[in-house]
Image 1 (tube, rainbow, N blue to C red):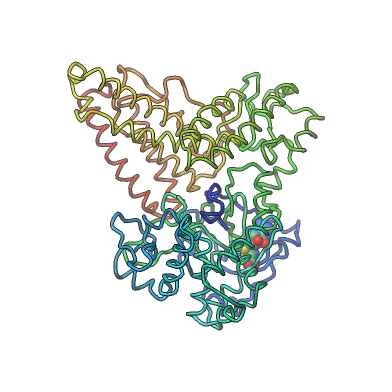
Image 2: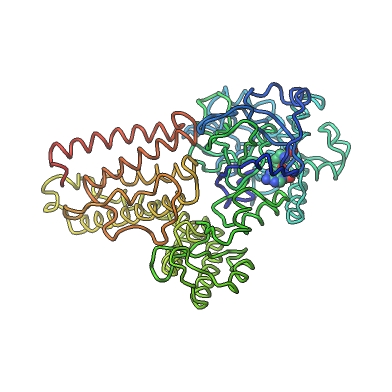
Length: 619
Ligand SMILES: C[S@@+](CC[C@H](N)C(=O)[O-])C[C@H]1O[C@@H](n2cnc3c(N)ncnc32)[C@H](O)[C@@H]1O
């Protein structure tokens, strides 16, 4: 399922696509589910909600189907995980039992690694931590350079200890044992490394010690690891920031689509001592007998990269409606791989992308037939295709490098994204296109850090109060001016990201909804040093509310973002749209972010009211 933090940190987003069932007159034997086996499923999983059914199909095994119509925004499952482990970097910030963040976590006095909100979470976790604590202590003294094993290793160990605790014949254990295991060749080295670390972490010295966990020798360990990697689900915050990994055999039964009809989310992290719960929420309307799909990978990736990612980790080729359309259709230009018509007619052409950013074989075939603009039919000259091919390749390499060094050398990574983005945009790549969108998103992380610093350097006085300009020192003016520029740059960047994501994802996809919320938040930050009054920005600059043919340039006018009341008005629109989408992504109320966005929209509305009253909408 979605990546676990320490192994595949770059592939974090939960993405989506809806699955269109084959029409009854075109029966596809691979997609025709074998009928449910209610007794078997009830026995193993307990009673499922009556709206869901487990069925088996020849091409993708067991899957979860709807038994009744469900509207987008419906929570179809809500359940605690079997086991979970926080990523190494999240251990000091989140409670190891309920995963809630807290500045005041209490550290286990023995291992000094695991932390809890309070004694109730600590007590709830004790049965497992009692086994984990000496293992962590031993590991940290044996490995001073890397004192905590990865979340994957710790989650695997917790799974085995939980099996021992619950008993080999328990439903808990049988559910875990029933999870499918895939062993893609590309994962062999990772699996071996994980198996080795697991045995070392648990202090297992011989095959007989494995029997109490129901594991038979080295082959059994390899199988446990393969089952884990096939079914692991990313534990994330309400803003979809990955903070760990978990196992939930029931949630793992959802099969994958690159355009899923549901997402696995954590709309709120629990109040202290409550159980952590994952939710599966429909982001598209689902019909009875339709299979419900989630997504296992970053679906902002273009077709070939998605296929490689699924094959390497889950050992299957995706034939979801999006992939089928993209592999066969010459007409559809996916927003993930498109560039602007060089004639500037507003049309686009398809830049088929393979691994490492090379133009795909499909494109070279298309090459023979000529690649044409979808709007004016202009044949894209060979030189232009080559130019974009080179730029995409360079951008793809730069992205990999920037992702790799982002933590150890953020300055260099930031420089890379700063230099590459204009290069890709100048070649005509759409903001939704690979690798431009990924570079914009990474770049924004650095820009937001920069913004925090710039805002914290501001003088304490209210910069916008009348007469301030005359009393400020030149140094303060320059700081305020710099902060304004950084803020405007971050708003522009976020608008491009929100637009790119809106072209890729359906309305209500959490990645898209959160991008809109972030745009609204940035637009509502107090302007440190706005320019003279008078600029207006048309609301059309906001990303479209449903997927539209992707714009090929940034779509931003030179005067974007506007200032003063126009800016606040745009902030309000963005927050209100985010609110509507969050209600779908996280279910009614929009979870923790929905709550925050609603209260922010209220504040912005009140502020706008004051502007209108005191200044007639102008500065
Ligand atoms: C997490 S499991 C999903 C549940 C699984 N079908 C089962 O029977 O337990 C992931 C595995 O299901 C299969 N799978 C999931 N989605 C698929 C798809 N769209 N096409 C083919 N196989 C798929 C793959 O074998 C994959 O490794």
